[in-house]
Image (cartoon, rainbow, N blue to C red; front, top):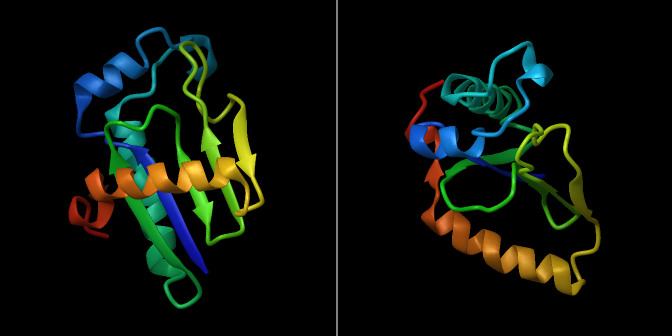
Length: 129
């Protein structure tokens, strides 16, 4: 099974700060998400990749130009894209879920994701697990 994940590049602190500039800190006990929190998420996905390497082919990428929140794709079966809202967490915000890879919206996302991946950083090139 192929799984692709795109996450905000936590190393770009300016981008991270702008993304969470208006964030509602009451959601996270008074603190905004930061580079350290995103790095922890990336590490968790890379640990899953390592632990389930025999069962899944997982790719984790860090992006700087994707206009949405996180992105997950499971083969040609399903796509999830999170939404970056100014004051809400991407994990609590609405997600777009696309289940039919023959639709125009799937094809459009796929074209854009392929371009994103070409310009993204493979997380394994940054973090050693």
